[in-house]
Image 1 (tube, helix red, strand yellow):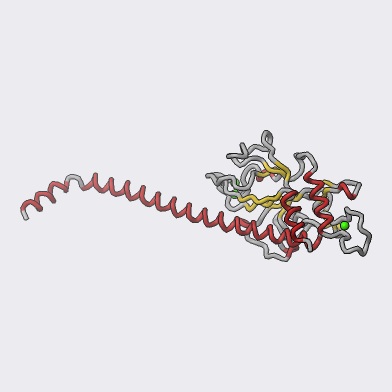
Image 2 (image 1 turned 180 degrees about the vertical axis):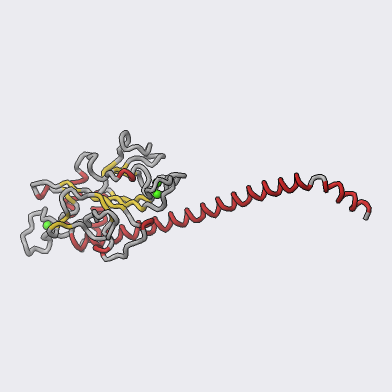
Length: 255
Ligand SMILES: [Ca+2]
Ligand SMILES: [Ca+2]
Ligand SMILES: [Ca+2]
């Protein structure tokens, strides 16, 4: 009894210090808990963004098989989900915009998950050498009425043409990933041309009012390689296919 009482009175002198320690420790704990919570949510968002990008890839491939071309980018500012066609064909020079969800028969996702989209478009006056992937064109000389007239095999010809072209700075291409593929730097590290890329922007982590992160925030044809790690200022999810990859997939889809 007596020992307990004297212990209690000895403690009285430390009450304020103890309170301060409790407050500081409590503060640190809640900060740590908040960060962990935030990280879990971020990882969940990113997984969902990756799933949605893969869904878009399936829609794009199905569209390619049906129409013998890749979808035309939606050039509207807000992203209405419709292909920007002029007289029924993809407008000249329109190679970067939003993915045309509505035109491929999909639902338009909310802004965080709505993908930017670029498609390789290098027209050529000679049809067999044409490399405009958003154009449905007879490239193999099949006459009208032939089963392979302007079909997916003509898109494969265009993809092979793209694969044979040197990397062009005004066509969709990838820079590094900050790791094995080198620096994320469109000026000094251009890695490869792609048939198309998709970028799901997720959040505006830098607080500048722009969901897309560098380098894709500049609205140019250069984006970082898929798999670039997320950082404090960067959470975009990129998915792309080289012309050879997409041609291989389409070839397997042929009867
Ligand atoms: Ca043909
Ligand atoms: Ca972002
Ligand atoms: Ca930003």
